[in-house]
Amino acid sequence: MKPITLRIWHWLNALTLLGLLGTVLLRKTFLSWRTNSAVIQEKITAAGGQIDPDLAKKIAQALRDTMWEWHYIFGYALAALFVLRIFVAIRHPETRPNFKALDLHHKLVTGGYVALTLMTLMMIGSGFAMYFSETLGLAKSSVDLMKENHETAMWFFVAFSALHIGGVFVAENRDEPGIVSRMINGRKAD
Ligand code: HEM
Ligand code: HEM
Image 1 (cartoon, rainbow, N blue to C red):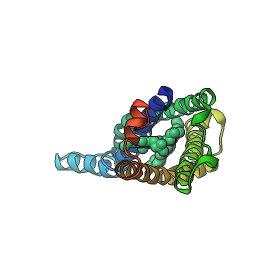
Image 2 (image 1 turned 180 degrees about the horizontal axis):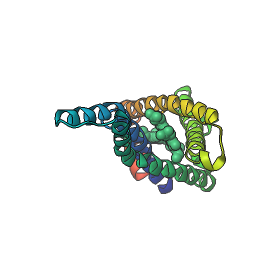
Image 3 (image 1 turned 45 degrees about the horizontal axis):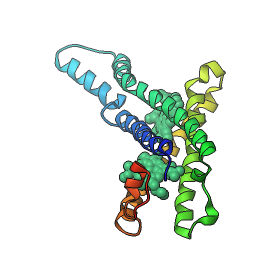
Image 4 (image 1 turned 120 degrees about the vertical axis):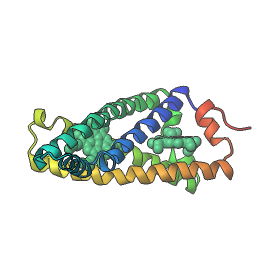
């Protein structure tokens, strides 16, 4: 049996991570301040008005920031879920990675989950350090470096999600039918 707490954790964690990636996607596309400040300037000029490019940028950023608040809401959720996963591991030792009992393929899969855990911890650490940088009195150079790493590390999560969802679909169709149901109802297929 997969404990109910692990199953709930899994789906909430998946939604939270996809939510975080969604906020980044919106920030870089529909709500990009570069694109939208150009739109604001263009529309005002077309209507015969004038706007300082700096003000157009500020308006575009303000529109983006309303959405970006969700990066922080999901960020808090990710941190809370990390703590929950520690409790699940304490309460249910069988949910801890156990490489010895596994074949090579599942050693690699489990290695992927361990890497995900470490990278998640790094994102929570750097994310909160940036979020509270003023309170913590961090130097701008450290914040910039952290932001660069935090931003680059996003690609790990994109790759993990694609490989994981693809891998689960392949496993479901090949050697492990019922693997997805198991993450929903907890039971191993007969
Ligand atoms: C992108 C967000 C997702 C993340 C971060 C994620 C993360 C994880 C993690 C950490 C595990 C290992 C759980 C454990 O400790 O046993 C796991 C297992 C699993 N996930 Fe996901 N997951 C995501 C999305 C999905 C989706 C969309 C599906 C369904 C299509 C899925 C299906 C499964 C299944 C079936 C397992 C069990 C596989 C196994 O026993 O190795 N996951 N996932
Ligand atoms: C796996 C999870 C996460 C991913 C993939 C992710 C991704 C990103 C990316 C790509 C950026 C750069 C956006 C840009 O400047 O274009 C960013 C910025 C940021 N993230 Fe995250 N993040 C994650 C988790 C978190 C968490 C847990 C927090 C904690 C609250 C957080 C807080 C921040 C902050 C404060 C910024 C800087 C925003 C700014 O300078 O305007 N992130 N994140």
